Picture 1 (cartoon, rainbow, N blue to C red):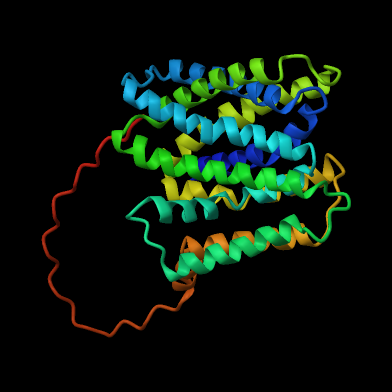
Picture 2 (spheres, one colour):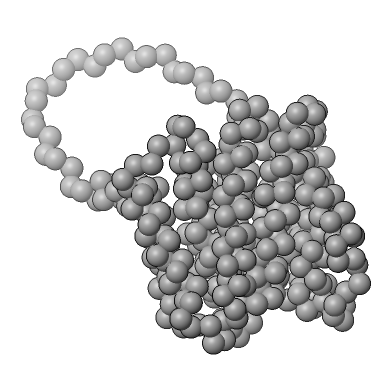
Length: 326
C-alpha cells in the first residue's frame, strides 16, 4: 500500500475503534433504539451525499432491494441496537474487543451456509482458538467493574449478526456486481427507515436522559464519522488495496477501542481483556492463513544455481487491466 492508503487504513481502524466510546457517551441521553436510529440517519445522509458527488445511483431492482433490506436488518439494525444495549451493562473496551471476533464468526457462518467455504483444519483450529479467546475476554469469573454477563453476550450477539450479514451479502447481493457505495447507501437508508419505525412503536422518542452537548455530539460523530465516512473509506480501501488487505483493519479496531476506553472514559482494564483480545487476533490470523504466509515470506530463499545465460524470450503483449468500478 502507498502512504495514502496506509492513512486510510489507520483512520478507518480509529473511527471504528472509537465508535464504542461514542456509543457509551451517547447512552447518557438516548435509549439504544433511539441511538441506533440517530446513528443510521446521520450515516445514511453522509453516504447519500458522497453518492451524489460521485454521480452514482441507487440499485433499481426490486429483488435487490429485498435482499438489501434483509442485509440491513442483520448488518445494521440488530448489531447497532445490541451494541448499545450491551454497553448499558458492560464497558466500551470489552465491546470493542468482542467485535474483533466478527471475522472469525463470519468464517464459521460461511462454512455452514456457503458450499465453497469448506472448513479446513486451519480454519477449525482458528475458530476454536477464537472461541476460547472470546471466553477469556468476557471473563464470566470476573464481572466486577465490567458489567453483567448479559451485556457482554449482547455484544457477542451483535458480532454474530454482523457475520450473518456479511455472508448474506456475499451470497445474494455480491453476484450482481453493483457498486459497493450504492449498496452501502441503500443498506444504510433501509436500516434507518426500519429502525425509526421500530423505535416509534417500541420505545418512542422520549429521551431517558438530559440532552446535553456531550451525548448529542457523540451521536453526530458516531453517525457521520464512524458510520458514514468509515464505510466510504472502506470502499475506497477495497478498491485501491483489495479486500484482503482492507480486512486487516479488524486487527487494529480492538487496539483503538481499548486505548480510548481506558484513557478517555477511565474504564477498568484487567488481564483477561487484552490477553483474550490477543488470542482472538492470533486465531483470526491463523484462520485467514496470515501466519503461514508470513512464515513463508521470512524463510531464506534457496540458493540459485549458476547457469549459463540464455537468450531472452520475446516479451508477451501487455494485458490491459479492466476498469475498476468507481
